[in-house]
Image 1 (cartoon, rainbow, N blue to C red):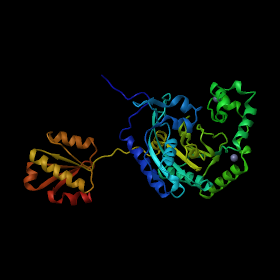
Image 2: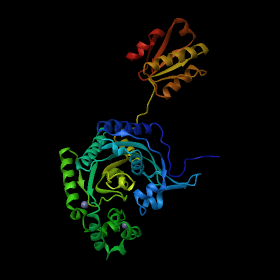
Image 3: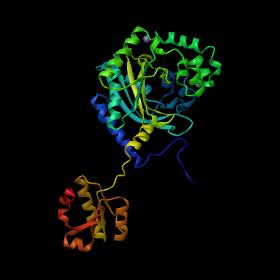
Image 4: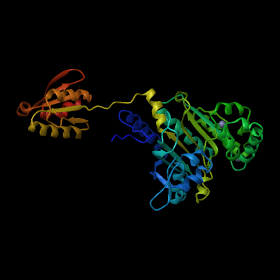
Amino acid sequence: MKYSAPKGFQDILPPEISVWQRIEAAARSVFVKYGFHEIRLPIIEATDIFVRSIGEITDIVEKEMYTFRDKGDRSVTLRPEGTAGAVRCFVEHGLHNLPSPQKFYYAGPMFRYERPQKGRFRQFYQIGVEAFGAAQPALDAEIIAMLNDFLKSIGLLNLNFELNSIGCDVCRPVYKEALQLFFRDKISGFCPDCNRRYNTNILRILDCKVERCVELRGGAPAVSGHLCEHCRIHFDELTGLLETLDVPFSLNANLVRGLDYYTKTTFEVTSEHLGAQKAVAAGGRYDKLVKEFGGPDTPAIGFAIGMERLATLLQTVVPPEKAAPKVFVATLGKQADTEGLRITKSLRNNGLWVEPSYGGASLKSQLRKADRIGAEYAVILGENELSSGKAQWKNLKEGTQGEVALTELQAFFAKA
Ligand SMILES: [Zn+2]
Ligand SMILES: [Zn+2]
């Protein structure tokens, strides 16, 4: 029997994992300075949570969710994104009673049943942030600046921040009407998805990637011309603040995002080095969602970072690090094996990565192994060394060697 990971699922191994860990560590260290705290959310939620928030007529809910009935006959879904669960958590725990805004981040796997392709997996990882309880554009600016800080901190410069506002309950219906009018006579030329979207979710025609749709929608009315005064002021203040905070951005009137719950600000960070799937992070405001989940009227905004794409991108800038031990302890004979383990432990307690030999092999094959795993030093311990109280050391990188008293090993490697 030969097993392999399910289609669309992948294992992430060393040394590539070092890139993931670098991303996660950088995210934590930047987010904490902005007052974002980690939350850990279930991977499974009641299906209804996603249908209600993401929207019934979206690709995710219609085609891509891992939904099944559990043994209690409840319909549950492997989370396809993080915001819905975070909002459910916010409402369930009454977090609106705490001082606003409440700011959270989470990291973990998400699941969508999509056609596997380059850079797309059925289990994929996101780092997401959500901030609840401030309607001011200062919060939008802050989290976009935080995202920018984070990307810079891992060494990714020259990414594009694209920004848009998709309006609110007041102005979006008017804008949708303008779009309907514009597309009415041309819609038959668009792809089947866009024809469906014309009746269900017309904004999404604006981000269709099919070439003829891109061409045919040229000259479509831009949302910027249809924002109500409230939304326009919010957007103008946001762009002003981003300039103040030195966050470079460009406006993209077609940035509508695929989810129903967005209001006002939407944004995306893209890279030209990623081909068609070029967004590494995306987010927006969702001022209505908390109320829809039964909570009090609470404005909110968030974004999610796609780990796979970010890791791919980062590897082109900083190659993955192949980690290697500082010391390999080679031992010959039962007594030396035991003493080797004691030495290994005490050097580890001093903060070094040390690998013991586990005994039984010839010195030659032990040193070959030390070399293969990239150890910087080998310490050699046999019966002679035990009786003389000295070990031999070899620097495997430089080819130097010598003797060191067993009692001096700590001091020797503290300086080495
Ligand atoms: Zn509006
Ligand atoms: Zn289309």
